[in-house]
Length: 173
Image: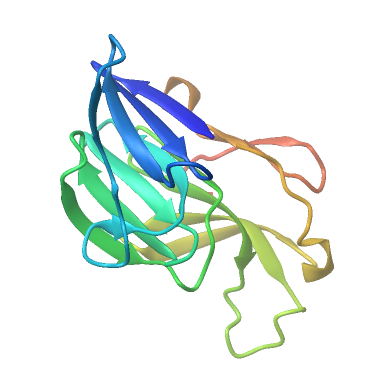
């Protein structure tokens, strides 16, 4: 479902068969994989893989447990971050450390009617949302684009599934 190559490692996220992230060396030899479960460092449904190249960390988002799991490059568990308030389908990081997330489910108006407004993109910093981008009506929540975020040349670009325009993140906006 997803393949990332970084340094001397190949990371493969397999959602359906192995339900894990596996690590191989560049010769194809198996090194390790994530553990299945709901205990510390275990995942049930890996949905998205991101490699933070500034910190040499592997981020895995679990669709069922709604958590980011953070590992070192050898998949040794470091910590997890609860993200139950929003779902994640893609994310990227700028050279300044801005993390842009793509979601269909984020609604910052927790006390208001959820059908009023939702956001496809938001900027995350230390598990806190510092900006929401491109509001839309919730009735369009089924529109999905695979991997709409690109961190080309350390800059963040993204494509909105509602208008197919390409946007650029600058100064967390």
